[in-house]
Image 1 (spheres, rainbow, N blue to C red):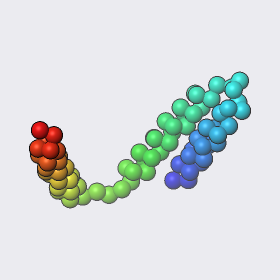
Image 2: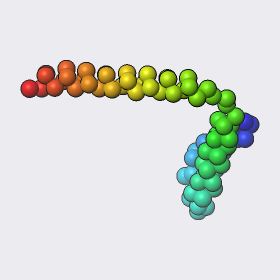
Image 3: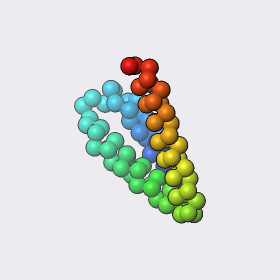
Image 4: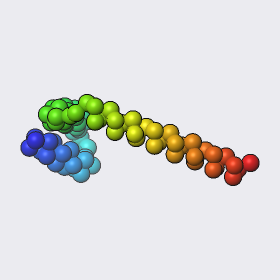
Length: 82
């Protein structure tokens, strides 16, 4: 987990000093740092134990809530703009 902090600090320093190092192309090191950051974040998130059924239930509840709110918003706004 410590490498994630190092990569984030490196990215912030790279973006801050980007204007001072105009002669040096920083796009490749920054892209590499971003790829490593994404990789290590994926490795860390892979260590989490999940219950598949509870995740499924929560995602179904969320999708139903989103659909109902979208339909209600469309009904209320559709009637208002006629």
